[in-house]
Image (cartoon, rainbow, N blue to C red; front, side, top):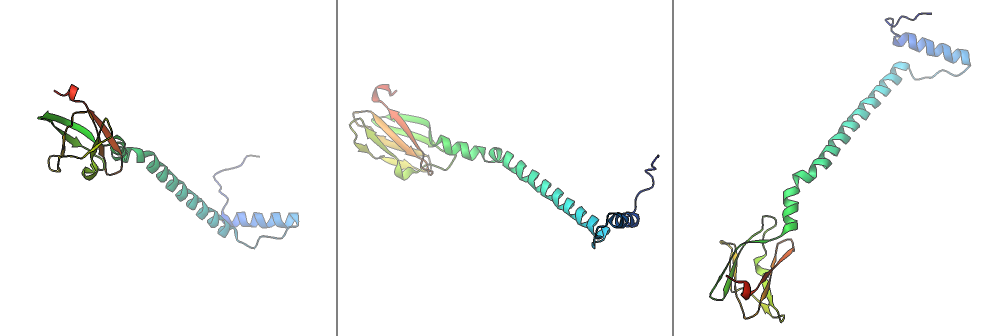
Length: 161
């Protein structure tokens, strides 16, 4: 028997067919009309499609977040850097840069080989520099960023230009 697919099953015919199946099997007919069941299913599918779209959007956001925050994240990992240094008449001036959180100039300090703490002689926020009066021994200078990451710089008089 060939079936003609051009003749679609409309809702009225489908409802009659369903009622006949219930009669033939001795089951109690469904009180909910087929039209209501079909519209309920369609609304559930629309909700599912919306949830899929939202899930895809959130996935894309998660995937691109490392790209969006890469520079600030990497800068917070690198910490302060010395862009230039100048040693003249026993004074060491370091020109600093931190494109991440910034440099915590208040907490910059140095230590000598014997553990003595040396504070900066001067700090210039406009020139982004710090100057130390260098004692006879080498210095380990500690430059903290505002996020707490500290960059150690080692200076030896023997290696000064």
